[in-house]
Length: 373
Image 1 (tube, rainbow, N blue to C red):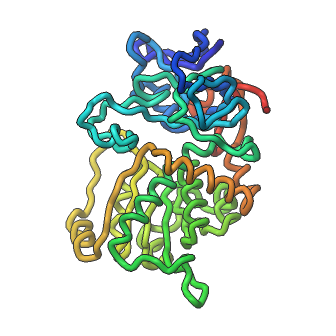
Image 2: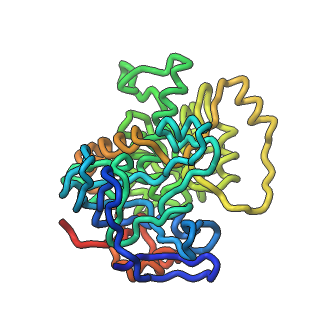
Image 3: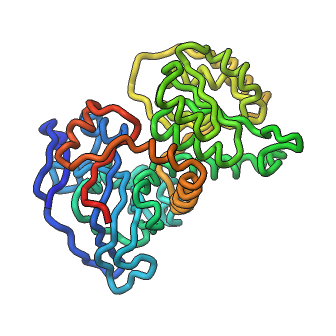
């Protein structure tokens, strides 16, 4: 079979022959891969910024946003059956007995950093025809989500953030479900930084949860992403025409910032305007750019005097995957056209070079490994 792989030492990439995997343990499942999404991480790996092949290999099969169909199961498998659509998790636990995160099945909170991630660090990814993995890392998806289920993994970033925000905000009177007061006004306001796939999915999750949601992104209206944002009830504000201070004045008290742009100067400028008792969530991983000046006194003063919280989140556990599958189903019922619009195009595996090089535009591009089922 074939796989899309990068060779870090050679600084090369291509579609290569790859040995078909076989079930070797009673709890393993064999998947026929259907869709694999291409994201910024894949582009950075293909640019050789990072990415670690498994031991004994000179190449790394890429791809971590995926959807597969179970074709064979081991004798001890109980949650997955042949024909099920499955979204696999990405991270695998570290080997250290003292890591309470990994030993508790929460490798997304690994303490040691020695975890492995499929398609990223130490394990081959999903951009190949067949994959074998343990059922504990698999999440069954309703068949009606077949065309959009590849969005589950990027949506887990927002779901994990919302789970953490919910836990953190138990520290204060945060409620008022369903997030509106008696006059029908929103109780909480959220600002999403960036209108890429992670930002747009995060905005959908926030809007669905009842937040008055604003997406703060680069291009002025009219544009396709602004239209998409407003189609599910959020508001779009352009960074090119509205300053951070003006944006904050327009929004009012900012209860939550969901950063999904990976641009630290913008993020820290917005952090200065986080509202009382607010939470700022970082999801982007910026490169090593030039140092920037930030007003640390203002930020520190606000954090202390306004009871603010800053957190970072990456990867996700089963709870976030289950929430993403549930909410993606709700999104497709509420905003079917908006969800479909997130996927710009599907391409054969041979086209992955153009996709990871950034030559293809749009929002989310997908490698269609196998045909529709």
